[in-house]
Length: 218
Image (cartoon, rainbow, N blue to C red; front, side, top):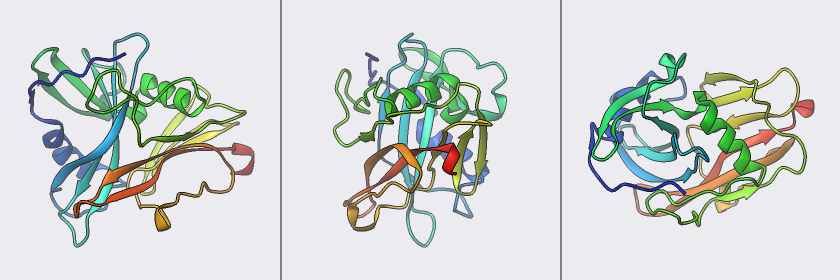
């Protein structure tokens, strides 16, 4: 199990994201974000090399708050060929310099997300070591899995991880809460991850974070 270090980060994660989010095609704002941490969870890397966090932040800069899902992969050295996915670097009070990447472009994070949907991994609490996340709901795919040979596409609707044949994964970025608090998987979904986050008014919102689709019915 990954150990959560309660220590200093310079710059902080929110400071990194404030500078990075406006460059994303799925960012809905028009100016500098006003971010607050709203929820999320972690996954363990069996090799213990990559820190994996699925962070939800809310942006209050626009006429109405927007929640964003930002999967982050933390590494102790640069990831070769992933310069385009670098969110930034920071100094960790215990681990030293860390490279933070958009996790949808990190093969370790994507593999662990697929393992979560397939029932081979368990979501962990975002802030407490060795503690399962209580508000993450997983529908496990009975058949089909995401191929390791995938292509990542970022667009206004989020991030799609696709292969020429077989299932594809859609990671939601701007998170609309589920209607009436109940998430209904879309047609063709063979697995999904849903979770909850704190809205700026203190209420809890719930919605889909990632959905695995049957490519044959896409």
